[in-house]
Every structure is written in structure tokens, then in C-alpha cells.
Amino acid sequence: MMIPERYDRNRSSLSEAQQRKLAASSVLVLGCGGVGGYVIEYLARIGVGHITAADGDVFQPSNLNRQLLSTETNLGENKAAAGKARVRAINSTVDYKAFERMVTEENAEDLMRGKNAVVDCLDSPRAKLICARAAQAAGVPFVHGAIAGWSVRVHTVLPGDGTMEWLCASSGGVEALTGNLPFTAAACAALVAAEAVKLLLGIGEHSAGRLIEADLLTMRFDEIELR
Image (cartoon, rainbow, N blue to C red; front, side, top):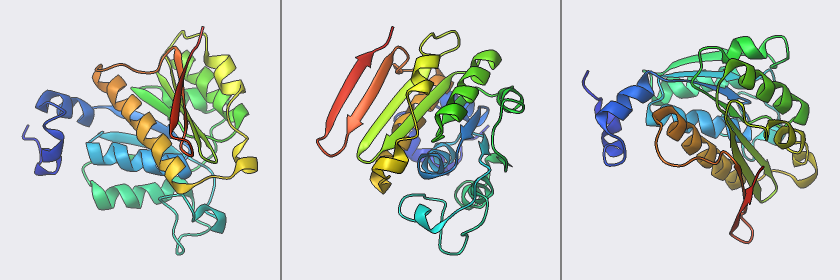
């Protein structure tokens, strides 16, 4: 299979075999808002072949400051559905599926079955915990991202990893108090998308066992070992 010209700038960092592996990979993105919209963009541009995006929410005016998929013309529309048009416009070879409902205990594990990685861009602690447990049950790596004001948090939870309960119970919910900034969402998305791609290809080092926290206001990055 010929590698399309669109991936020429990937070549110095990814081999042709790795590019083909990405094309055959399937990722579930949970939440298509501030972080999730950018994650969808990055995965589509690098060439992940199968993306399922889940979000039952619709765009509101307050989303316009940071959510890549939101525009003044699609307010009131479903966020996951908006991702389909975006992906089609930038990489029509990607198989994109929109799950236009909230992820619950009843549907989470089915959504994750057959996926190679799950990227968590949710803002609800309860939803994060439900999805992390479902990923564990499905045996799928779970890449967690969260933002609050100028701060970013990233962590990868591997199947059988005991950090899952603590991580998801202690994350999310603070965005409503601290606000969300556009570059914070984009920075978080870049980190979790990189984590997902490394997991798909089995390369590099990921953050399993470590919590990565960044403060963009001070440009300080902290690494917390998790046991």
C-alpha cells in the first residue's frame, strides 16, 4: 500500500510500517469539547484510521473561547456530530463514527470493545470513573487528560493498573470554578494524543505510573510517581 503524500511530513518520525499501523488502529475519544476536539483533529491529521467520538452534549456560546469544533453557526448542534464534518474536511480516509449520546455504565464497555486505545476528555469525575472501569474490563489502555485554568493533567492507565480509582475520583469538576483557556485545552490534547499514538505503535515511554502536571502560567512541569 502506497503511503499518501499527506503523510510526507510524518516520515522522519514515523516509518511506513508505523503509518500503516496507525491507519489500521481504532481509538475512542470520550468528550468532544475543549480537549476532545483537538484530540480528534490531531489523531485524524496523523493518520489514525478509525476514530469513534462520544458526546451527548451540544455547543453553547461559552464553548467558543476554546472548543475547536464549535463555531457561531453550529451552536445547539451535537459535538460528536460536528467532529465528523471536521474530519471529513481534513482527512477523508479516516473512518469516523459519532456516538451522539452520553457514555453510561450501560453502554461504556460496548463502546470500548475492539478499540486499541481510549482517550478520556471528559469533565465529570463520575463519568471518568465509569469509563476507566469499562476500559479496564475491556482490557484497553485509558489515556486521561484534564484541564483547569492554566493547568494540565495527563496520565495513562494500563489494564490492571491500580491507579485508576484514585486518578478518576480526584480529577475533573474544577473547570467550572477555574475556567478553561484555549491554549490549555490544546496543550492537554497534544500530550494525550501523543500518549495515544505511542500506545498504538508500542514506541517511546508513556506516563503509566506517573502523573504529569503542567502549569502554563509558570511553565513548570511536575511528575508525580503513583503507587
